[in-house]
Image (cartoon, rainbow, N blue to C red):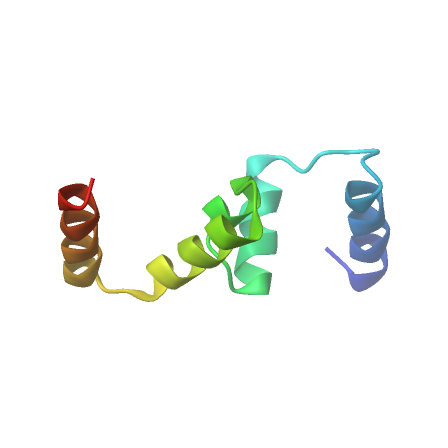
Length: 72
């Protein structure tokens, strides 16, 4: 997608005129350096958490999940 049409398309998304499909969300997430799940967070804290979680390796993710489960 060329830069000119991308800018217009983003403007439509921001104004709520159009919703991006999942493939477009994946492209936007890659461009922004955030995980796809970032777009589905309802608050800033959750968004930050998914971004930080994405930086962990699988072993660290599993350890964190286990720790969180035992704290509940």
